[in-house]
Length: 352
Image 1 (cartoon, rainbow, N blue to C red):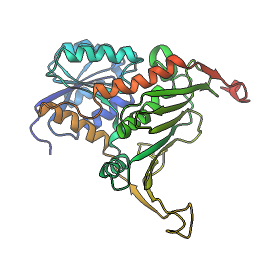
Image 2 (tube, rainbow, N blue to C red):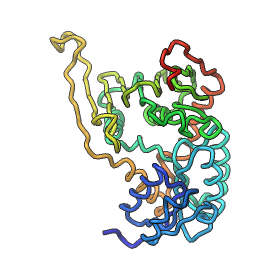
Image 3 (cartoon, rainbow, N blue to C red):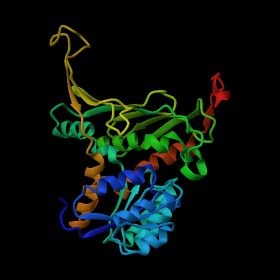
């Protein structure tokens, strides 16, 4: 049973992510969802039966008797909602990405600085996935050496409604698969290696007829010489998540991703220790340990950390506006420097 509830929460946007946030908040202590806003009020009228106030105008929700706002809207709308919420004295949790471009997160951070008593956090829940947390613990122990380089692949198959999704309309999203999904992997690269000073990449339209990229190839290097490479794709035809971390004495591979649909496969962490020919009969094929994870607490953990930062009046340590700014800085450099190259070799494109 939940404890006495000191915080009243509102959700702006009751689509896929808004519904996830509602479900998670219903199970978190010390917070209660008391208001929800969606342009299509028909989708939220039933919530009145739970005693939740429904709104078609987010400004009315912001002005209501709530303490914190969860912003679950398309990228083009979220900056204004975040800024107006902070101005109204509300703590704010905003889904990734933090707007359409670097200027959007700069504007949000400028407003945040005017309200040092308020907390602003962004939804980079991949930091809290069990495979990532275990890999982070191993790296930070130092027992297997330092990180040499990281490789990441994150992609999906596009899907039947890909062409009609707002996520592929540049004026709404700001970009394609890189800012939509690849941003999570870039955030994880920073989580493990810190900031990167050298940024380059390639953007391509390999299959889908949209005005944004459906494939991105990103190359990063930091001042320590650590290199990270990412392939973010909407043409893998199979949902895939894989992050490979190579250290002095071992490698760690987080593969699969616990998700609602299970389409990314079972989440696992593979640990392989370096073995040369004097240590193993199978040169280049070291013994591996595999850890399986079957429970995804990432959504709950990040919300609990947000509530804890509020209740204890402590800075947001993970997924802060600084983290959001830094990862958008990387994406901004790629979008500004790289032209989207269209691939004319795909025979089936005219079918889309």
